[in-house]
Amino acid sequence: MFTVEKACLVIVDVQGKLATIVDESETVIANVSKLVQAMQALEVPILWLEQNPSRLGGTALEIAQHLQGQAIAKMAFSACQEETFVEAMKASGRSQFIVTGIETHICVYQTARQLKEQGGEVEVVVDAVSSRTKANKEVGLAKMQALGIAPTSTEMILYELLQGADHPQFKTILQLVK
Image (cartoon, rainbow, N blue to C red; front, side, top):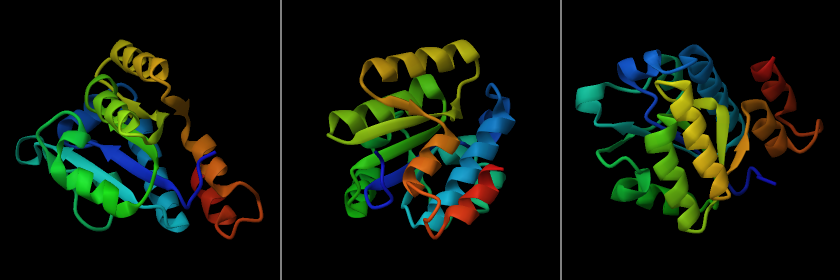
């Protein structure tokens, strides 16, 4: 089980025009936004990345408006190849990584794979990741699952973190998932 004490949300490259043209983009953006708001309520750290932001643009406004701090810029497809990300990940002290973003078969896959290879417990939020095509998303998810990276959903991971209706943030989370 993922817990608020061990979890960290990793948002991969939900930015620029690409964020609006991936398969089911509105659902992905809405679910990433819900995850951000929920993690803040639960005090779970959030690390978010932007691929070559000077060329591709910043994080989608619907998500960025809820984020605090600074995005981690990267050029490598895997966040784990970016020293700033590795330092932030270590500084968080977390060992469970909830991965979301775009594109599933490239940056999300490579980041999740390397987080797992480095000893992290990794789950990918299937309704908060996408690729330009559904087929590429499915291939990316299948490869991650074959590596032992479990699929989850926005609602599933949030209730897993709450662990019960008596959690102080239950009503906040309930409002987000309704």
